[in-house]
Image 1 (cartoon, rainbow, N blue to C red):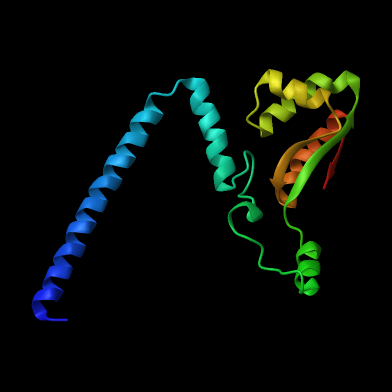
Image 2: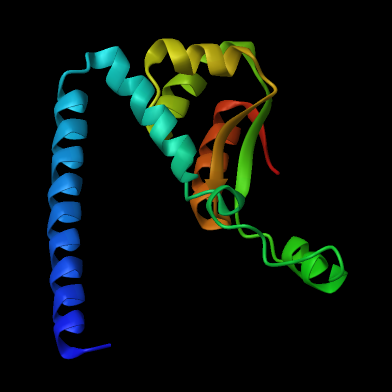
Length: 157
């Protein structure tokens, strides 16, 4: 390639980058404006959808399989067995509760989740159900102890 052709190619690449950057900036600006125009309910729906697309869970850490595919393959059972044996993230499940302690349990559920009163009440009433996902044992133990003191049967899965 001649010197003139190389200079022309560099100029073209620089022009393309400038146009691409400008187009990207306009696209990002357009998306930001559209997000600002959403009402409260649409923003909530968008947030839920965004977290699902990004592989994030509402209460815990990112879900590993949603973003990055698993490293283990079907031909490597040793890797899969090791992954199962070293479980570090658990789901807290409410098995049952004493009817007299229902209100206290609802208040406690609200304290460690970001649920409102109505949502927490509905969640507790449909026991057995998962109260919180993606907890480590260190995070779950104090919550489990408190719920057990109140009269709930809670397990980690």
